[in-house]
Image (spheres, rainbow, N blue to C red):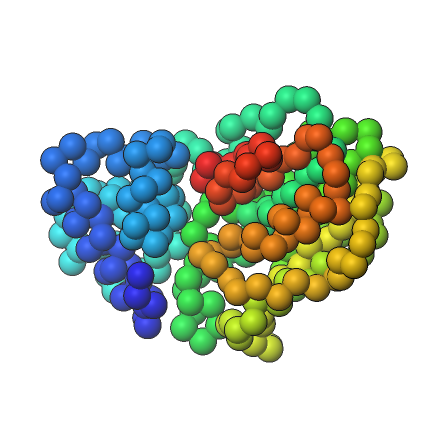
Length: 261
């Protein structure tokens, strides 16, 4: 998908995407069912998230004439979908967390950036529904008595991630750095790293050989974590039960939770 160079180009681009889906599919009603398998293949082929595809279709339906948009060309995509389009039912934690307990938990929270498109610092708004820090703090992780937690975050929310880890009852150990190899966006410095805080509860099994506190792996689609990370977790944590919370895709030998699964 092309990189948009202005706020209006982003809005207009998603409107055209919605119009295209409607025009090319007589039975386009099926694409409105967010989270269903039928959407996944279309979203992947267009290199957008399922949520973005859902909103693009709603956008084209609600405003068949883009010239009649409220606020005209001054509107942003984030403001459009939050104020002028019907909300998705799955925008919050309506899907209950799995029952039972897990010895390894990987979680990539939808941190509340609350940002809109900015060509100088942030090219797109978050392409998934965000949760507030209060909502994240209320989550009850399905952790076993002996459990390893990998909590993904970015520079902006490192301290919040540590506080969440404490609230969830885990003892902080260290930070794993993911070096994406290429420079990204940023207002103060151009960023190319993300971080996973490692915490434990009880006395989980641990099998350290020569694994380090840094992984270098090229970034993939937005927010997808590298395969090398999951491979390392399997080696370090010889657990019987694992879960990936707010996962972007399913992985063998690991339960998955999230509205993109």
